[in-house]
Image 1 (cartoon, rainbow, N blue to C red):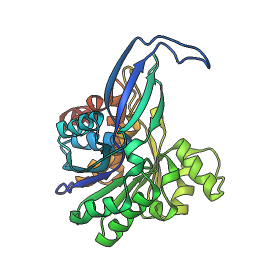
Image 2: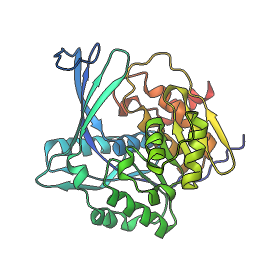
Image 3: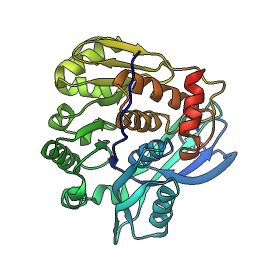
Image 4: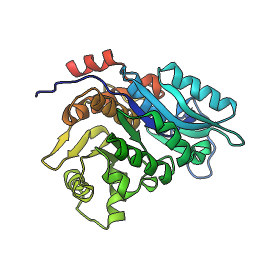
Length: 312
């Protein structure tokens, strides 16, 4: 495979930033049941934030646009992004509202449940994002579904005006319009999100991942990547469809943030000039590695670690 890379462009992530509260449990509680955690921790989170960290850990020049509250949690979250080398000059501090928070339970098998309170993420305005994007005239833009549809549409409009590549992770799908999805290259969803988009369009292609990806590609006339968890990802373009299997990890400790790691690495790889096929290979490899340790940012691969994993 010829995968010539070019000079790395800047990745600008417009997305959510949270403080994550983790509890580690033997198994999830039943309705009405109280259980004791084996341990607990606090960390950095939010889909946009996680994706920015995954990209920055590969050495990708990454900028972040988002919002936190004028509280201690916001200060800690921004400092956390800074510590990974992400440019946080585009992060707004909003008064009279708290920083977004996610409450995560991780079972002994590595599975998780997550409840998110959007906080400042829901109050970030399209006007604020438009101003923050004013100096962004080159590189790649990355969005998710945890901000409002108005914000995501504003990012897509800026991408069109400046002829920039837009990558959309429709997670969740409610905050991403069809117009913005169609402007994306690629559009990235998991199996649940793919089903939601197909339902929204009234399409029933069947249960095969390849058919689902092809239906979305035809619907939005853009490259589509459907992540399949441990099975890898299926990709559909106008010319071909293929399945990229995922390496099997030695052990599964915590699956939290693996999907975000996939998106961040894919975006960073495209920024570095890798083609889509090689970028998806790099992304599934990095995502598989991320489930072998606890937490989110610290579980993501560095550039050196990823190259070793790929060489295997």
